[in-house]
Image (cartoon, rainbow, N blue to C red; front, side, top):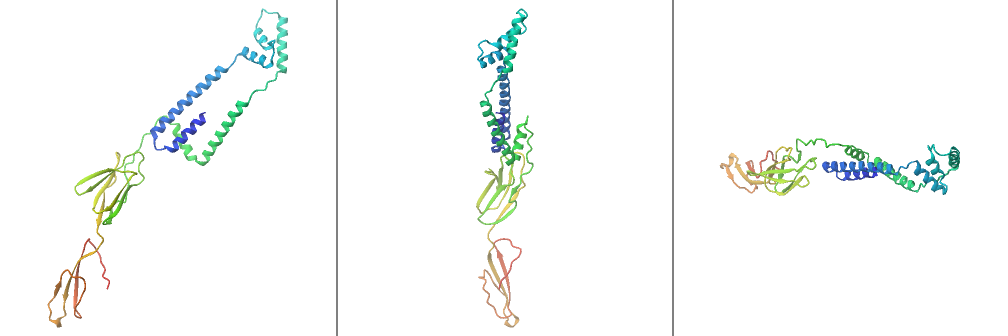
Length: 289
């Protein structure tokens, strides 16, 4: 029965390993049941103990002895008032009976108990071989007399950190290795005001993002760094101005073509300067011609 109770705890432990308080209370309950069971078995065994006279009666019934040989011997044992001759005869007869006494105990119940015990033992050994780490953890937890102090994380790690994306892209903010059974709240700022949102499954997906924002994640015990998501349009040319510097032989003054389509038409040896404006800040650009 004790082995069954422990197997029950292992099964519950494997499915609810993160619910420490519930598991601890459950283990206490199982240990109380185990103690009560042991006390019950001791009292039951004590109740089933028999004295010499009860044993003698049992043997006489077993032998179908109508003369109650054993009972008479037990009753007269230590009796000093009876005749020594009679006592000697009764004791001698009892001694002869004991030399011929044969008993065949009923082992049918014991065989069933042993079968159940061996089955449980084999099952537990199999579990120990297949999942030794889980069994060891469950046993160590089962022995605890008090829950150890909970140590919370001092920092929340999130991905993707600082990010630059193009307009209408998706962004997934996710907690890395989140602390179990602790609420994680996302704070993000668009404009002047911070907004907060409890994370489901420790992550939040922003779809078709069209604004830049700051964000961080906080628990009751720690917080992440503050990161920025910057949204840019896909790089494109907004405006092209062309400055034509004609050769001296033409006697033509410089000409500025604003908001040009980009097509260049000029006399040979004319120098053309392109002033290009993009929709996003850029550091380098290439002209392919």
